[in-house]
Length: 382
Image (tube, rainbow, N blue to C red; front, side):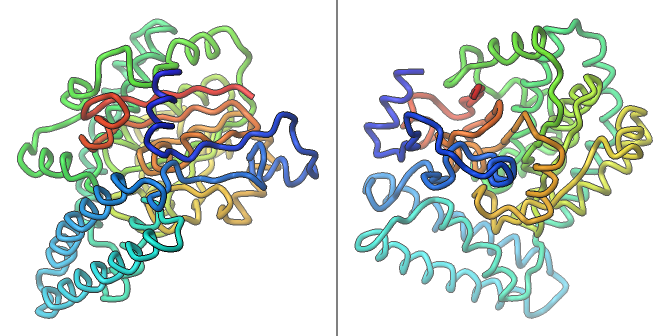
């Protein structure tokens, strides 16, 4: 872990500025935001204005991804004769916006990966593309729900320690299914049979790049049940259905209330709150635990209020903040590259925190001392 942190420092990674003593703050503010030190919270991991090698790479990377986004937009409305023209306009506008941000990164800053990614959705909507990945998400959700019961049966056959190890591995493997990652999109396009088992074989073997799995398993096996867990989820399909939901179900079995937070609006193939509610209703047919938890309001769904695939904890909606406060959240789980690596990797929170992600970018993985599909499993105690 110390080696990993030295690598981050050498590449201009923004470190969280944790004070020597906890600042005094109102009880309501403390409970609502979950931030250890809200005034010094900086969600972004890398400041591209200070790291010119990273800046050059990520601007080029996003510029290549824009072509993928534009093609998907046109494909999503293939029966509309104007879709190709509008997707080209989207592409041009995005590139111009990137160029403007690149000037800012050279002069004013800070500019971050989060900002580059958050250009996507407003520009797609500007040119009439509300949710280009909708059809793909629906297909993947339906396929995953069909395999949901067999995944639960597989997990239920394991002993307690092995079960939690498998649940975390399954959650990480599910996180591979990200159409916003170019390496992954190529795999999914070329191998229609690629599923959870194939993803489990892809992720890094232990020890992981950051590997706090043993500490998490010890806590879950030897400590009391948490009162309420909040999970910030990522992608549709295998990720949320076969990765997140079995993990959440096991928390529910421990009588831990679970709040699941998904995107308020579409972003790439990330699951939205409305889609998540529909998924849960379907999964109720295959799991009495989830069915009961929904009926008894022990399992809740909220929109996260974000503009893209990253997570800025200062921008949570008021109703979600109120739910965090009233339910006395004592476990925070953040999943995915955008939410747990590009943002919040170094952020400190007021409760136990589990940050989980698979690195689906070879350049970033190499720079952090790993390889493609390296694993981040960071467990932090207050």
